Length: 87
Image 1 (cartoon, rainbow, N blue to C red):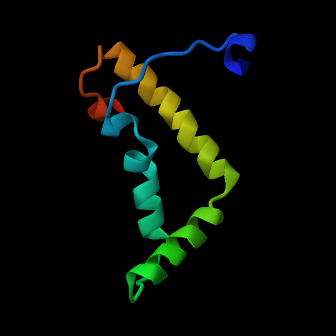
Image 2 (image 1 turned 90 degrees about the vertical axis):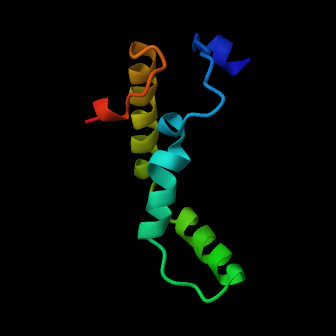
């Protein structure tokens, strides 16, 4: 197993926490900001795919760095709400 070989500690993750879900704290807003009005569902699906294919790698890196920060805040706050602690 790659994670074990690289001495990466596997931590449990809450079943669902919007504070720890990149889709909630980043992706949905990113798509909305980069999307134009679409006439129908099929056009919307194509437009979303196009936006997703153009997301810079740096944007993903920053997002997952934020995820690590958010995980630390969650742990340090004993799983309680921590959104107000995010800078």
